[in-house]
Image 1 (cartoon, rainbow, N blue to C red):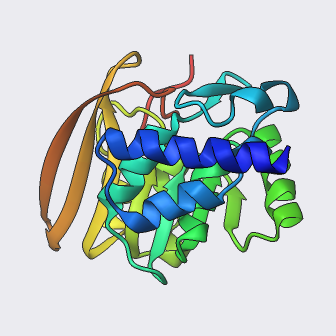
Image 2: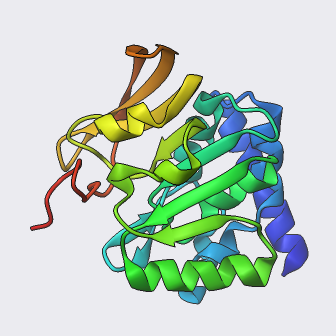
Length: 215
């Protein structure tokens, strides 16, 4: 089984390269992190397909291409401090940790948070996780060199922009509840941000004070 998973990860890396992922650190992380560990056992067979998969509680683990694209857009170096909004099953955080980042992550679903915290402990991952509203960030550890939001927002939360370090980058899908444009936001001065758009992606909604309101 181990060799099968290793072969599947190598094949996934080839797929990501064909789709334009060029950062060797990102590709190495995808080749190293065992995505099947972050999925329900029943879905393990699908772990290395380039598709999003359900993890329960109406949440998903993102498509590997999306994880790789967002990570590549952060353009971080080892040792950088990064905040993730939407821990989910922990795969994105594990990719960032594998790349040598100092990872802080926030999850709003308490059951998912508890399960993923246990998984981080089991895997020996030094990731700082908390339960709460990710749209207001984690001020006590700001500023962050990178902020990655793994849920679709109606707009870019102002509080998260304020927690970005100078020349730091924030990657967020923005749009309606069914489809979003990926935005990469670079802080170039106190109140000046450069924004680039990349269509089109689909995420679960970002719920919180500065996101969508829960139905």
